[in-house]
Image (cartoon, rainbow, N blue to C red; front, side, top):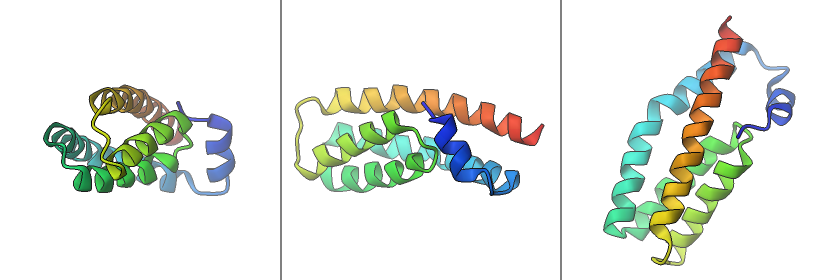
Length: 114
């Protein structure tokens, strides 16, 4: 979930168009990123998983979603340490959390373009 106060504090001086652009950039790459991460998890490709989960974490962190950020960090660390046990659940948790983030992003986007 987005920490709205932190998000607004971070972007209050930015123009709304920039925020909408950041949201659009994240949304445009989301499906491909998760498709890659899902594949990496299934294949236990820890090197690619570490890269993709880390990249996702960076994108999520911009939006002040500590839950999704922490879950993507956990997945990154699991990949770094080649931990297989619980990998599927960690990915499922991240995916659920990120779906909520997407919903919030769309709400914010609508607020900013209205």
